[in-house]
Image (tube, rainbow, N blue to C red):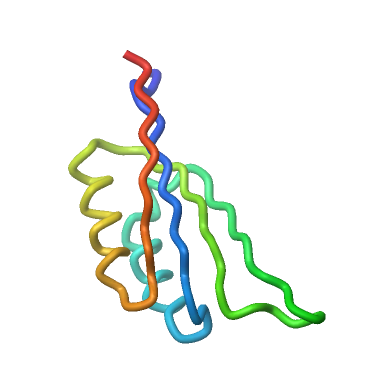
Length: 88
């Protein structure tokens, strides 16, 4: 069955080394709903920068997507943005 929506979540993580574990716990909890995951991080003078961005393509209903983004947004140092593309 074709999806009626594309649910995309942008996750900005500050101080990645401090907050990445909590983000990973949420990603693991919703692992069956994550179709695509792309990680981007800053590079500063040959070292990884402190901040990063994850882009998630989410598969599931609106309630599950909202629960996912809310749990991520409750983590200190994490900002979440949603993009929803409707096909109907």
